[in-house]
Each structure stands twice: as structure tokens, then as C-alpha cells.
Length: 311
Length: 249
Ligand SMILES: Cc1cc2nc3c(=O)[nH]c(=O)nc-3n(C[C@H](O)[C@H](O)[C@H](O)COP(=O)(O)OP(=O)(O)OC[C@H]3O[C@@H](n4cnc5c(N)ncnc54)[C@H](O)[C@@H]3O)c2cc1C
Ligand SMILES: Cc1cc2nc3c(=O)[nH]c(=O)nc-3n(C[C@H](O)[C@H](O)[C@H](O)COP(=O)(O)OP(=O)(O)OC[C@H]3O[C@@H](n4cnc5c(N)ncnc54)[C@H](O)[C@@H]3O)c2cc1C
Image (cartoon, rainbow over all chains, first blue to last red; front, side, top):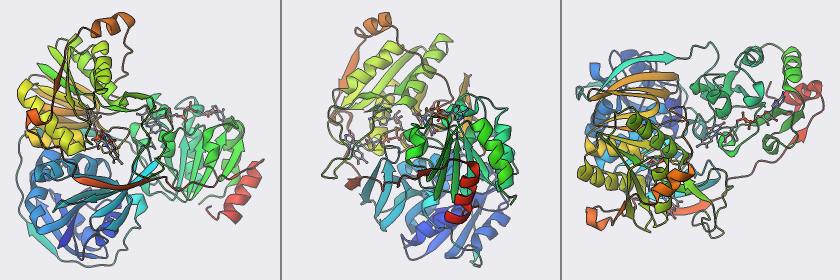
């Protein structure tokens, strides 16, 4: 039986993490289909069809799917589910919202944030902020799985799967979309950036984050933050890296004025190279850092910004 | 309207957990347990609704062993009115917890259920969404702000790109995110008063719910450790290492 990846998208293209989810899905079954539900999502469906390893794209057009309300999208996935062995979503804010609703409607368990597919019914997932790894096996006929994108390589593009139009399931009338307040940024998206510059309470104000922006812009990096920096209002909530924020695994993660609480480490310790800048030489962040530099960030960051070459 | 809040007993967030030597799970004996931090936020939100006159009664729900009574007592000391414990020593997975909560919701008929977005032990982030599905209710997940009025709720949600506003019909399930509020501490007089508040104890069987785990835990292991690195003295040295040793800039 085939595996169905449910894709989030912006109407034009599917999110980049769909390519990672396709890789995970191809380890679960012989054939991967992608569902692109939306209102005028034809372009996004085409972008899914271009992901290598996708055998078919299902494009469901319905005004009810325009803003990805779980109440309206879940019934569509449930309707398609009997044809599939697995329903797979990336563990982002869309997947986390929709997948459990689908699982409960199907009366099956959900495997959350799988980081490895051991067998089609067996998955490894982090628990306790990544301080333990559980291997879990499911006996459910339809397996609902969210996967952590950073743990699966993105499938390449260049494919040309057929796109099939399917009908929608309409609006249930339980929820409606009002609007969004999205953070505007020209910088690379945090979870897929090759380099991430991240700031914590040590920055002491939102104004001081400008210093990190300058460094990030020079490196072509995404910007992240600790919970403390978000709670203090220095930066918006979508900057938060950690157990209860975003998980990142870039080639280079630069933690600036961040102490390294386990909840923060949970979101970045799979980065290839970690740099820590902190004035406290005992800060736990140094235990995971490949390169640590002890000192005042207000001195070190401008120096570093001047020393690196513009990308 | 009545508000039902879920309070889960978890290993305190400050504890450095240890994986059991036989790889069957995580050591929980003699470890400090607390209310899941997201559930403190849920209780706080319900109390604020009561203070604004929007909620008439707050019921704190927990499922698990007898010690969960302590967690419920904490909620009662914060300001919840009474507790319901579904007592079992069996392993509970999110679908089972959602089914137990549904049974209690069917009985109590609350107008709103507030749960944490994620329990910090199992990190599933499922229970609230599953409960909403089972009840056929709407869901306001990862709530950053909640505004209840006239049979509906406006929910500001924390999403990947920032914040999103939705309007949902009541009854509904809300799951809390970190910025929804700052939970209060219980005062000593309130802790004393909480001792007299009632807690109803139920058995899963009595609710007619099958709680058998659907996921079998084959093993629990330590994650691979990162090798600790080196300290560099100067920015020039750092840039050199990043360029020539790590090859990342
Ligand atoms: C339920 C729950 C969930 C959580 N989820 C997350 C999460 O997802 N992500 C997350 O990050 N946290 C999370 N936390 C919070 C976490 O426990 C820590 O409180 C938080 O990560 C601390 O942020 P920080 O390192 O910026 O602040 P602090 O711990 O205060 O550290 C600031 C650091 O800056 C350094 N510093 C100060 N001034 C300077 C200077 N001038 N130059 C150099 N260094 C300086 C200090 O030495 C210190 O090490 C969670 C907590 C709970 C309870
Ligand atoms: C390796 C492993 C070992 C385990 N060992 C045990 C064990 O020894 N004993 C045991 O009891 N369980 C055990 N469990 C089950 C696990 O700890 C969780 O209780 C269960 O999987 C629910 O997941 P969650 O709490 O992460 O759900 P989430 O969906 O993340 O929880 C979200 C919210 O739902 C509510 N909620 C969830 N559970 C409860 C509850 N029980 N009571 C009240 N509110 C709740 C809370 O508001 C919580 O904030 C184990 C699980 C694993 C993977």
C-alpha cells in the first residue's frame, strides 16, 4: 500500500519540509503520494509533483482548505486514509495541529516527531526534550506519523508525477480564519537555514538584536532565539528554538548570550558545528559547543561580524 | 460555563532525567514530580476566566497513579474548584487520555476544555487535538491569547511564521502555549483551603474506556553524546577554525 504525505503550502509551493517528509515516507512503504489541499493550490500541487520519489499528487480544491483549519482538513485526510498504510506530516505547526485530529478520528495512535524509520511499523522518537530516545512500534492498520524534517534528507526535485484532482469535503463551520501577524524577514527560514545565529537573555534588549541581524546578514544566516528572549519580547515567538519551539540542525549554530538549558539544547544539539559566545565560562552551552569563546558578547559579536566575509 | 482543565503529573522540568539501565524507560523513582508547566498555564487561564465572570466552575482533571491527587491539589490551590482523577497505574498514551477526558466531558458538560500543548515528558503534543476530534469540537491549539465571548472564542495561535488568529465555535478545546499567561503561585491560605476541596476518583473501567496502549515501547535509550569541543581565545582564531577546520563559513 502507498504512503500519503499531507503537505502544507503557501498556495504557490509546498513547504520545503515536504521534501524531507517524502524521504521519510519512502522508507515506510513502496509508493508515496502527496495530498495538496487548498483553494487555488494548483501551483503548489505542481511543486509537489516535482519532488523525486512522489508517484502521484492529489490536489483537493475547496474554499474550506484555504487556511488549513484542522477541523476542515482532517475529514478529507480521514476520507482518503483507508487507501493508505501511513499518513505522514512534517512535525511543524500545521502537522502538529492536524495529524492528532486525524489519528483520533481514525481511532489510531500517532507517532510524534519520528527521527528514524526502523521498519514500516517501528520508529525512533525523542522524549524528555531529547534526553531519551524511545523506539516505538505500532500495530494500528493505518499509521499516523509526524516526522522531524531535520532528521531526513530532503528529496531532490526533478520528478514529474501526475496530479489528480479530487473533490473536497466542504466546511464544517466549527472554525474560521481571521488573519495572521507573520514576522517579515528576508533572511532564510530558521528550520532550513544552513547557518543560524541565535540570541538569548544575554542580549538584554530587542534593540540589541540588531547586532545579531548584522552578523546574520553577513553570513546569510537565519535568526533564532531562546525562550527567555522571546518571553522578554526581544523577538517574536516564531524565533524560539527548543523543546517547545522549533528544532534546527544547521551546519553552523552560533549561540550568543544563551546559557544552554536542556529545553534549548533539545532544539539545536543536532547542529553540525556549534559555536557559543558567553561571558560565563561555566555556562552549560559550552558542553555542547565545538568552539566556545568566553567574553562579553557586546565586544565579540561586532568583532566577529567584521571578521567574516560577506556571503 | 464550566471549564475543564487537564493537569498532568510529570518529572519536574529542572530534573536531569536518567534512562533506566535495562532500557525500558526513564527512572521515575525518587525523582521530583510537578505539574506539567503548560498545564499551569491552562489552570491560570481558567482562573482568569472565572475572575472575569466568564467561567462558573473550574474542574481539574488528571489521569494516572494515586499521586496525581497532589497535582490536582496544586490546581485547587491555584484556584480550581474541584478535581476528577481517573486513577490507574497502567501506562497511558494520548489517545487513551483523550478518551478518558471525553468520558468526563460527556458527564460534566463543560463549555470549554483547556489542556497543555505538550507534556514535557513524552512531548507528544496530541491529547488536546485528539479530544477535540473525539468530541467533534473545534480546537484552538498553541494559544497565545484567548478571548471568549458569546458562544465563540477568538484564539491567537503561535505558528511557524508568527501568529495566526482564528475564531472558533464553543464548546471547544484550547491548548496552551508559553506566552498565554504567567501562572500564579498558590498562596499558603489557598493551599490550606485546597485540602478541603473535593476530588472525585474514578476507574477507567467505570467510564467504559479501553486504555490499552496502542504503541509498544520496544526500548528507551540515551541519545548519542556530543563530544565537547574547545575554547578559543580570540575572534581571529574562531574564524580560522570555522573556515579551515569545520569548513562551515
Ligand atoms: C515548559 C518549558 C519549556 C521551555 N521551552 C524552551 C524552548 O523551547 N527553548 C528555550 O530556549 N527555552 C525553553 N525553556 C526555557 C529554558 O528552561 C531556559 O529558561 C531558557 O532557555 C533560558 O534562556 P537564555 O539562555 O537566553 O537565558 P539565561 O539562562 O538567563 O542565560 C543568559 C546567558 O547569557 C549570558 N550573558 C549575559 N550577558 C552576557 C554578555 N554581555 N556577554 C556574553 N554572555 C552574556 C549569561 O552568562 C547566561 O549564560 C522552557 C522552559 C520550560 C519550563
Ligand atoms: C517510553 C515511555 C515510557 C512511559 N512510561 C510511562 C509510565 O511509566 N507511566 C505512565 O503513566 N505513563 C508512561 N508513559 C506514557 C506517557 O508518559 C504519557 O502519559 C502519554 O504518552 C501521554 O503523552 P503526553 O502526555 O506527552 O501527551 P501530550 O499530548 O503531549 O499532552 C498534552 C496535554 O494533555 C494533557 N494530558 C496528557 N496526559 C494527561 C494525564 N495523564 N492527565 C491529565 N492530563 C493529561 C495535559 O494537559 C498535557 O499538557 C510512557 C511513555 C513512553 C513513550
